[in-house]
Length: 117
Length: 112
Image 1 (cartoon, each protein chain N blue to C red):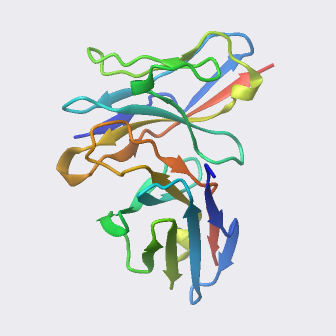
Image 2 (image 1 turned 90 degrees about the horizontal axis):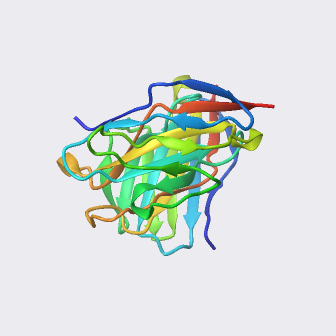
């Protein structure tokens, strides 16, 4: 399996809802990432997990809560979101995650398109 | 500061014409650079990485450290090349652990 999968494909939620986005990879990668991508903009890094530990949090509001239950899974728990949080949420994985000095390619999932009403 | 600049938001060419998507970077040290492509309604996918010196779908990109550039080129554009192209730099500075910094992207439109 050489893909990163994400569920759901689309999600519509109200500002009081609690929902979760899921990401899965079976490539044996030890680094996983969450990005947010607004329309016609580049992806913006939110979180990085390396060997199942949160290594980077790019000052993301606490209404976004990541979780890495094991090396193949990455969740993003959503609570009390705002309409401006509507975006495409991308998950990515890479072999190692950093500090190795060689090109550690990130592979992206198809994304979850989130709409907050 | 680490930065990736793609000066063109939109590049429009005719089928069969050469195409060059520009990317300049700012990085102190040896950069690791990538081109990612996002076709309409498809996932962001890796096109090229400079370390591999490869040609994918007819595209090539050469790292020019003197000009701090990593331009993407194809001699004869095809309609199916129409997509959003992002240049990206791996950032190892300031505890970033090799995370990607993306340029703002260039939308390539290839007309018949």
